[in-house]
Image 1: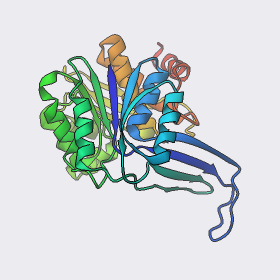
Image 2: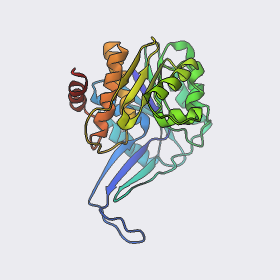
Image 3: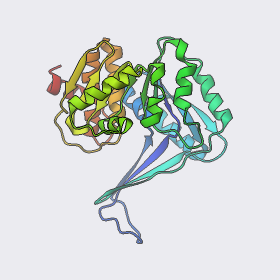
Length: 303
């Protein structure tokens, strides 16, 4: 079974405002509400690709109930911890001449809530897949990802981590199956500027030396690089298409890689699937569908 964890999920309220005028009443020309959060994005794309999974994390109050409904309507199982204090956040994304975002805070997560989540994670078994994605709320210890990996270390679970800076570096001694920083995040970790794919390979190897099994680096319009645990190296240019929405593209790449690996057991196929899934989401108003991914695979890698 595949599980995803999103500590601070959201309802994303996306509004189109042709000309945003501050200090005045503005009316939308379009609007929609979508489930938000990196782990939830991974869950939705995995479901689109035909992989059953369960979304874990924290929700609170009426917005939490609405979020669970939105996710379950997409055919995804949920098992969230209900928080007593606060509300699941609503993130407002304004699409005008310039895009702006207003992100909420989220509920007050207490120690008992964290322990309740850990109890659910303790039920995972050998062969399960766990995706830890996104930032950690201020109310939680910064070591949360590392604590989870340490807790599950002996269970032989495939764990993918999509996080930044110390959140990512701290988990490396526990040998995550997959990490996916982008090229900018990779540079931030080592305090360098990443200029090309050769630089990516150099510093991806350093992350592998620190414990990561497979290092997948996304580079937006410049493509991607995979350094696999068997020593193989794969590079790809970005598939061709018009970017409509970059939100969720990195999460989609993680989902595509996992789906490709589980389906084929091949790092090359997993890499190609990840590249095309990430791009398919970027080329779509919402997250990638299986048809969109398969079309890009055929066009880009002749599959």
